[in-house]
Length: 359
Image (cartoon, rainbow, N blue to C red; front, top):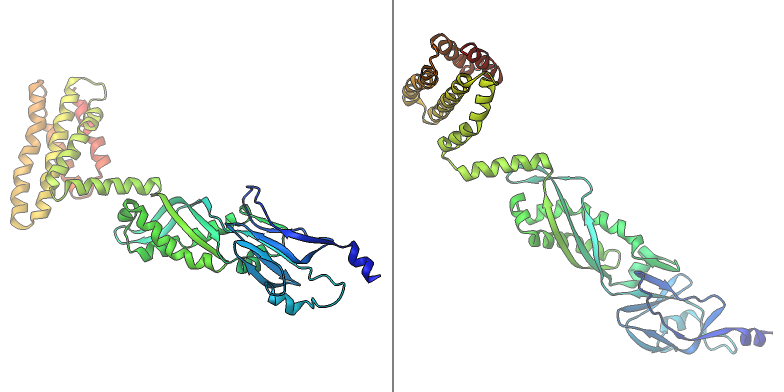
């Protein structure tokens, strides 16, 4: 009876695997109803490795090459299985093939901004994305930790886990690089190297080797980007605050003229323009006074007041308007604004009302 059972068995002479291009990391050779012939051939192609598993225990690992399966090539299985009994097949084990080629263009990115500590800006919320490549380097470890006894294990089943590992280590990579955000965004290669350094041991724990890491973009959320743009603008101006205030005044003149004129005639436009220029001069001079301090501050304040009053008066006189009372009121309002009693918006509203009375 034992002889008949032995004859009916199907023996495997050649074990091999040809990848079908579907991104498979591990594949189990179908062994149901079959046993491996003593002296059979194992073919492991380049970019592959094979693992023999007997009763849940990894017996041997084979790299690329062609092997005759005998007691000499499988010493562990020889110990586990007694091959010297008559009419008993050599062994019946599970054989797993692993793809060791690079799995390229694996995407990663921050679905939500992550918060990091930055040397220049303090706490910063940034976004980043890129890609990476990896390969199976330790098939025994990958089998015991990840793929297990499944018939096949595709790349897609591991994608979410690896992406999470990348995101989890971004903050550590940035801290380890020692780069502030501006340098980080300008040197994405250095950022990628720092991130790869953090991730390499994490990948190795599950039998993988990180082959490449790229950072394609590092950016701030829109609201923080606006603040950064303002900081860059201040950096371009440098310490010349007078020029900066002149620029700000030039930007504000159309708004002053619009608020003052409001479609009520040329007189209102002229008054608005004169008041805007005067106010810009006062702001610029007051800023310079704050920087200089002391006695120089008082002297410049005295010189600024007549200049502020003269500009709108000259504009009004050219159009036949008597602005004495209006300008006196504006001066008082200006004092209230400089003392913080009136806000800029309240001052502009009152100025517009007064100037309309001159039309």
